[in-house]
Image (cartoon, rainbow, N blue to C red; front, side, top):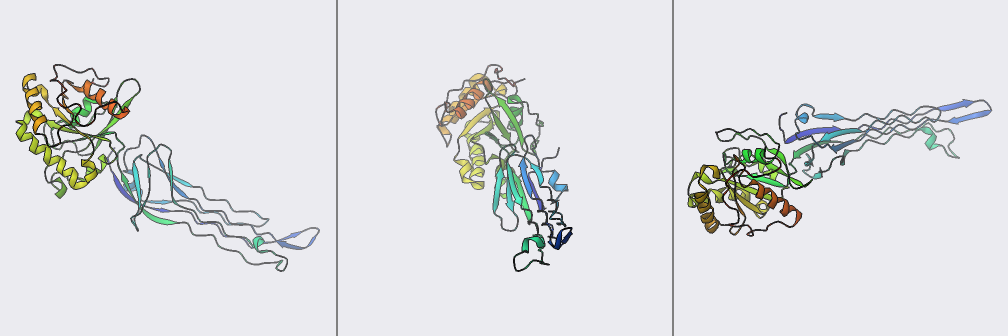
Length: 360
């Protein structure tokens, strides 16, 4: 299914049915009287969160959503049938904006959560409603109210606990494959990841966390280079960021400049993102000897501009170091994990595959 994270739609609630003007003629009721019923209410439109839905692609083809209107009232005091409410399923993590004003109407973050975006019109009043002691044969009724109509802009932001960022070909997609059951595309050329990917990483027992992988960043992404910063919004709800670095690309003094470039793009997009915990994942250690990987890590820990912070030596290819990473991340979310600086220099050079539950 094609991934679409923004869409614009128009919602039109149902109008209320008109009230009825009617008079009864009954046996043993010499003068009769008004018996016009009220019109039915128009259907409203609700957005509802649906677990498992992860794209807004349906809204690219179905742009106008209408709820049914109410039926008019009729004689014998019969109220018209109300229009059924229209329920529109949307992915969890969707922000809803009014197109005209730009106001955020709300967001859907839980399965089954509802947000009313267009209210149906009330039904009109029949002439029975206007009967009084001085007006016993009213010929007045009211039309139903027009239902609300508005344009909406929908913006999906993935609900994830951890976000992966880094240069293209740093191994983010391979890392997501090794940690979870997600199967993003992996290839030996830049920008193989064109859309965000989401994976569930299982910890001990039933605990775990979601990891989001976004397309790779390059210097100048805020000015539109590469795939730009469009997908950085999917990191907005994350509590922890993994900055994945290809340790085999060069000496630490060269790598630190690239690390700064990517984290500077975060600041340009949203300064609050750059203030979140960012752990360095030094990937592709399988291409280096354990001694060389350790040397480069130790050097990075001394020249890293955000030092001290957690650094991990990992290998997405053979799973090295992933067991400790999963354990420490689970501890972070449970409140028993490391804070900035507590893990600096702690991760040893991996010598074989880690025993993580989803590393298959």
